[in-house]
Amino acid sequence: MSRTAVSITLDACEHALLEKITRQLSVAEYKKQRVRAVLAAATGLQNKEIAEQIGLNRTYVGKWRTRWAAHHQQWQQSAAELRPRMNACLVLLWLNDKKGCGRKNEITLEQRAKVAALC
Image (cartoon, rainbow, N blue to C red; front, side, top):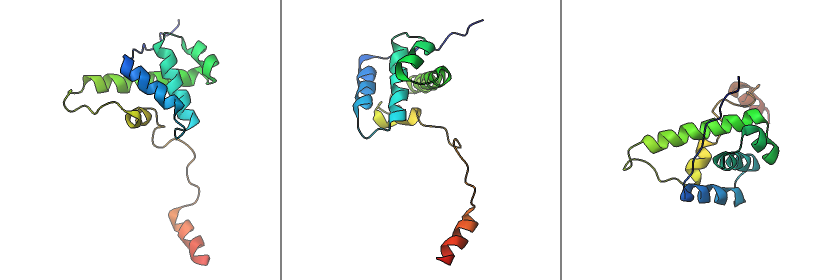
């Protein structure tokens, strides 16, 4: 049984904004890959095709596609007068890693302070 990927639709302004983000030098490459995955998903490609095209794992493509769709849907359903205008900061915030991802500190703040006191 195959699962169906979340469909993504972008209007012309949103598409142009995402294209602009992929060309910005100040944006990290891994975030650009995520944006490219969303752009490719909006064209109707499957996760496997997107993964081959941009060099990500198929699982990650699905993850970012789903995360984008959830944030975008929530954004669209919010009250128009309270909704922030879509901009690069908002898009990159949506495609950020969740808090708590990555390696945990092995040295506590107390240990760090003791080492600093020795210097």
